[in-house]
Length: 220
Image (cartoon, rainbow, N blue to C red; front, side, top):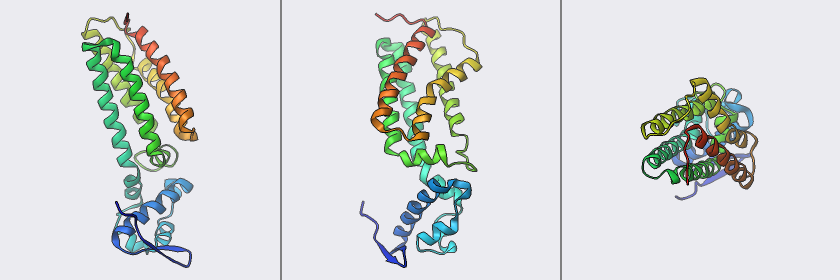
């Protein structure tokens, strides 16, 4: 992909064509949202920094939230697809190869963390700057997804002859929150990647040990 070409005029970066305008709006909007949060971010400021009038900006995006969504939606969708893929892998392991189940879970943790750090600004926007958008409750949304996977995991364990503990919805919610809080903290506070990997792997090992006890799985 070729890099956008810009002109400078009185401290403002001006795009040379419509494609450049689109990219420049997103670039300046990202900085505005990171600095001010969604609710306090100014469309006028984004337009000015992009060398556009407010009306010209609205030819690219219909609203401030549409700009925000364009910045975060692709990364969010990638994370959901990764969750789905690794949930399927773990469920399949429970049936075919239980010894690999927790190894797959650990791989999933590593891949999720890599994805987050490859798209770190998008996740910072979701977790730190999304008040007033549909991503405002992103933590609870992801916990709910994890809790649904946990319920599926317990049902699958019982189906395959294991003897999982009977956990209430409240217990599953708390356990899911506990599992995900380290990741949330890494995003919120901007942990360095190497440190985040180290912490995430330790937490994943502890969680896998807990799940092994919950589903009464006796591995060789």
